[in-house]
Length: 72
Image (cartoon, rainbow, N blue to C red; front, side, top):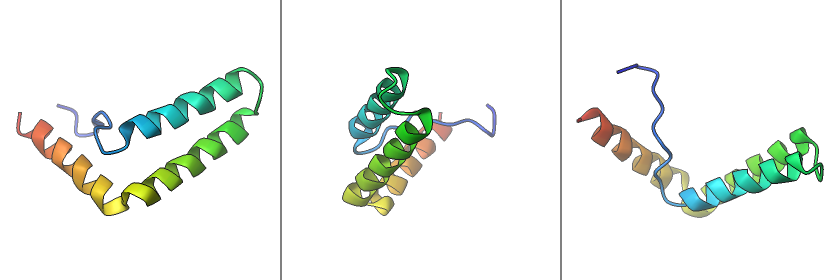
């Protein structure tokens, strides 16, 4: 019931977003990249994913999830 709740990411491309994050964490944890470089790379990859899918499409999909959750 918290007004600050955050819903699971259930949008088009969710697998791509999570894979990018997992790869970034793995590269930082293994020492292949600094934590900052890994985060910067993940941020760039997420930007690329958003550009491919479309900001409006992602925003609308997330808004639908929030509306469904709020209707509970």
